[in-house]
Image 1: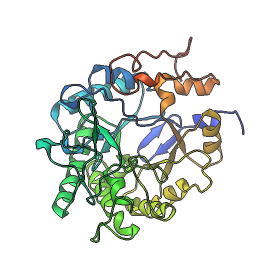
Image 2: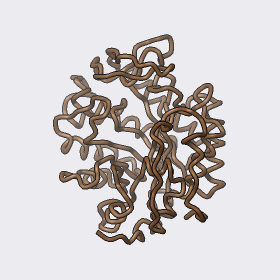
Image 3: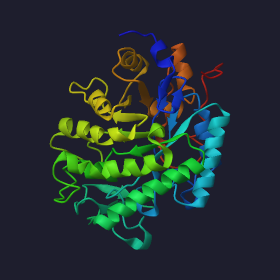
Image 4: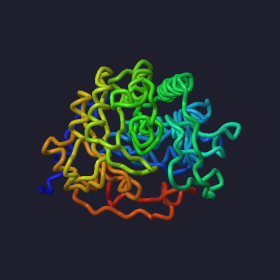
Length: 362
């Protein structure tokens, strides 16, 4: 494996998005939204510090109050949230970066404590995930059985995604990423472990992909497919997820969004996966591929240099290394993040990680 990082520093066009390098900042929940779930000045500083990434994908951002899964996560459904995100986007652009908003609905990964009026969360089927969730006060609570969505409920959520996408464009974002992974609502529709429906949204993979396709179509109508990506996690069991045949399902899901001319798909798949399907998903979707899943500088450069991927997204390395692209380019070591400050809190462990001594950025 070559230590030559140069493949990561060739520019690339993802639809209407032009990336100066192929080091992408992956979405990461940091639980630091302020009152009204609006991002504040610290969030603007945090993302601007990392603007040397070829592309920044924001933390998962709920499309409605019903879509919230965790404490202090931001939304894009209210005016103060739009204004907060506008300050973030302006700061990233002023630092020379590009940023897309990752839109998400938690579905069954929620709790009545988060839901307006204390309602039960919604899902494709009335199947509670195993485990516990942290409530608004950070106390552990058992998941409850969600309400299976009817057709009107599905249509309302599709509209919520479209409205949030329009709000993201109003905030100045360069594009949108739909979160269709990690066990949240779109993923819940895709996988047969959580989708037991017998209507047009359940059964064979082609029907389970219908909700995804409707969300993507609605968002593409607002922002254009050339500024739109989709994130999948075919092997990820997080949030009690499972599917009987992911190697069949996910290329079909990719094919379902091909008509919309996506800028990219973003696939979470551990580096070196023997039965890799990431490129098959991207080929089915007729678009570029970002991979994510434990890559380091060498494996990332190899993936891009070999054509296995068009870009590589890094998650935790970006927490403690705001200048990650420059460190990779110069062959410098990565700092380690403080695990105790990843979720929640203030500036400590969020905006106080320094660049490498003497670094001026990439």
